[in-house]
Image (tube, rainbow, N blue to C red; front, top):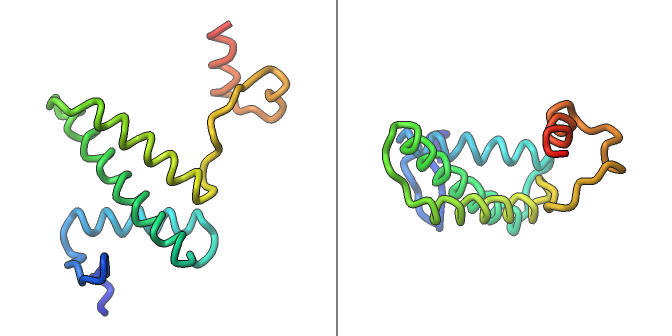
Length: 117
């Protein structure tokens, strides 16, 4: 298999298209963030996460170009992407963020807390 080829669903996909290159970049970044060679179950989650990330990016691109998007579908894709990232251990589940959590909080998080008092 050449470097430009992708195997998805047991089929070879031409990896030279813009979409395929973006998919490979997202999947590669996620794989690097995972920090290890993914086992089969993690690979399936990585493929799903990369696909969802691409769908979210495409909607964001349309929105920024002034085009209408299906907002409910976008929200659903973002939520599903978040779930995939949590399953992979790359994102934390949402939780209550209180003052006791401020130790080590970033400047942006502290500013949000201050603005919402």
